[in-house]
Length: 494
Ligand SMILES: NC(=O)C1=CN([C@@H]2O[C@H](COP(=O)(O)OP(=O)(O)OC[C@H]3O[C@@H](n4cnc5c(N)ncnc54)[C@H](O)[C@@H]3O)[C@@H](O)[C@H]2O)[C@H](O)CC1
Ligand SMILES: [K+]
Image (cartoon, rainbow, N blue to C red; front, side):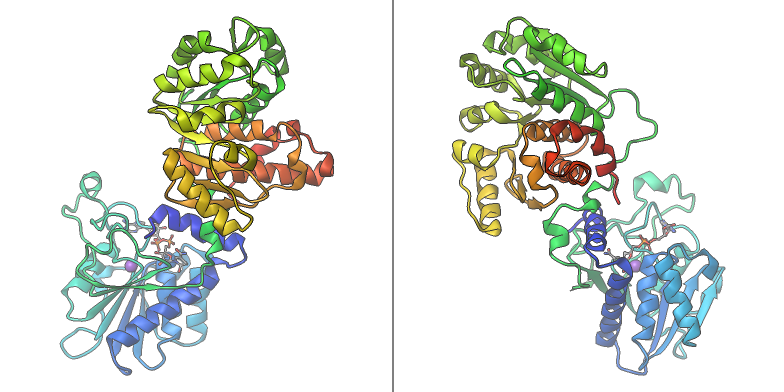
């Protein structure tokens, strides 16, 4: 089962793996033609009704695979307005090949052709797929009514046009009825749906036979975090200060650099406001690193249980707490972490010396734990040499803990106890001190704007990519301070 958003991510990841969308479209079109063959014998009249996006493009490809049929392509709109290069290229290929095409500029003129009673044997609905938004507009709306009125077997490409693949409801439910002055939502009523790669949540609710076609998306496009996972994290242009994340880093004492690296990474990963709660003994040192940081000094030279209340109140004003960088393993550290987490019910990234407390603490918080393999074992988890076996062990341990895990390694493993994702960005130069602090801060910033699993997966990917860029510049001489400034580039979804 795959949602529309996840499908878009996987599709982009496939392209990054060297399987471009045009190649996938060729497979999709082939699968559509196969579905038509299953619905009608050679010689049957087939009307392919195509929109101007890639859903239409799939049917433009299918037309080339239907030589044994009396097939006609109906393009809704002028060819110059086809929206994607790959669909346009497939349209041009049809024209040059002299495959019958027709452009429909007014859908009232749509003539599906076919037998004497006015219906073809098969209509392929390739008007709109996953790119639909809102209720059907013209010319698709009238065309959908014409398709529904015909006696043909209707084969929908990917999803019946006007149906939300995630819910099975017509697009433009309550929200867009207001926009759509035409009134009730209209959607194609399909007999068969040929959908791609995986089942979609909304299709099982339909009264249609659903076929899932493998279009050649490699399993790695789902298994490994890729540039597609960065999609949809863009800022709302109307957002205000704080809307894009307020992060509280709690750490420092024996170290001043670690909490600073986390905080700077959180800022570069997109957080609006980053506060650092650290012992007064290192507060001015932390502040001295950057005027972008808001430092909240705590009395003394170590974070301890006496600070739990103050930190709880700072945490209440933040979206995410990053707990651990540079805290050290002094006497009071564990007691503080235990006391804080017991009373906390928000989101937190837990790293370094704070990790040991997680398995035994009773908390309502949603945690993302970022251990390396040694720390994982210290927490009671297990590891293995084989990556698949390791991934399953991490998943089981995350399920036991009830928290998300990001287990660092040459290949990082991320799990929320349910899904597992692997990350293979990064390089051996990143074993240098401080990169873990950068990762914790990055994941913290992301956890303010997306779910814990995705925050961990994208954080690992982005920091690894920043590390790869730093290694290009500095080789194995890279240092952790090379990473934060490279995060914005690493988080571009290309
Ligand atoms: N890996 C894959 O997922 C692949 C999918 N393929 C097919 O591509 C479509 C999605 O294509 P896309 O171009 O993103 O969108 P659509 O064709 O669904 O829509 C395009 C276009 O339509 C306009 N539009 C949006 N909403 C409405 C509306 N309510 N009324 C009228 N017009 C509307 C808008 O301008 C959009 O840009 C997917 O379903 C698959 O069929 C490829 O085969 C590659 C692999
Ligand atoms: K469709």
